[in-house]
View 1 (spheres, rainbow, N blue to C red):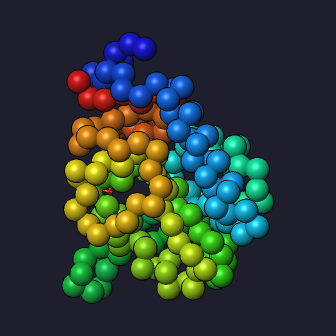
View 2 (tube, rainbow, N blue to C red):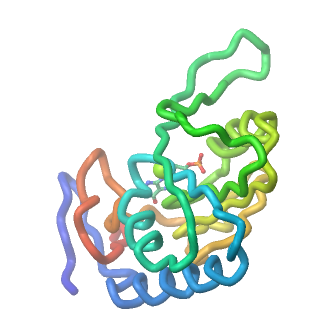
Length: 177
Ligand code: IMP
Ligand code: MG
């Protein structure tokens, strides 16, 4: 793997495609065991999670569904500030075992604001699975249930993650130089 340039920045190799595939396969195995007979619903958060979701989902051997949503934030009328809504959520979540799939959790702000809405839909269970967990950056009380990698608080691109819209196409992950 070599250094890559995206716009004005340089990135160095951080996680190889092989390492990523290995961890994603292990996570899929775990879901195959823990969710057998439960027909879980994977709720993939766009855009960043599309490759992670595709690779994970291909490795499932149990009955499972997937749906894709985009989170949009707008200023709520309440004083608490941001409200997050899910665009494209067309599946009934009531009594379902839901697993959120996120590319990366950074401060946890987005999920922190989104989770109460999901919980209000009377799901049977709700878990969070992330490819990358920036543990040091977490600033909101969000519990990550499954993480493929714990990573330091440095900007990364590749495997679905972008820098200003670019870099999502790499099958490896690169760190800001
Ligand atoms: P949070 O709400 O602070 O947890 O932010 C999560 C979102 O920020 C992710 O879904 C990403 O879209 C974006 N993000 C955070 N860190 C990175 C990074 O290192 N590279 C690319 N996107 C990132
Ligand atoms: Mg994202």
